[in-house]
Length: 164
Image 1 (cartoon, rainbow, N blue to C red):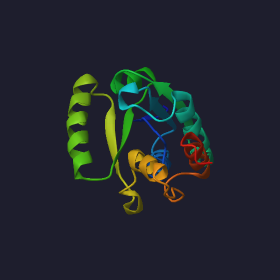
Image 2: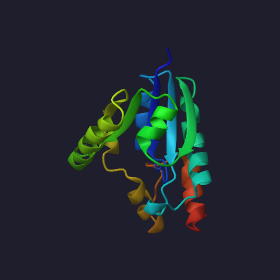
Image 3: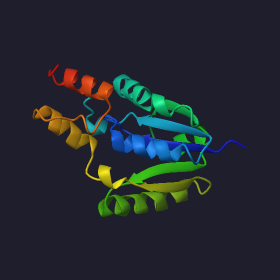
Image 4: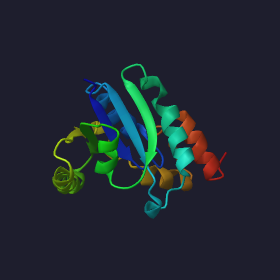
């Protein structure tokens, strides 16, 4: 039986914290679906197609460990997870406030589907402060983002901000 994991996110843009979680998640599942959320409410800097492309480029080195599929989705995470046959929902935690939010979300998700287990990965201590919103702000204000994103994501980010 194939164990399918689902890692949802906006990935605007994907950063090394996300990549670390993906790298650890593929050790637990046979197939990992990375769901790029169609979440216009968050006002993403990058289009859905750009975010999918950045995830594809960034996770390319991880492809040999497990089957990895990058797929856009919208609607309830648990509905999508069920539709792709996921038995594991992958989530990352960086700080206490993440835990509080994720704890509540997990309780609700269990009400929606008790067959899908949520697995939490603690962020690597080197990545605790990294957040997509902060990466974008650093780039917008002229700072270097080399330590936070892959080279291809940096190139796209700089181009998007007119800083080529």
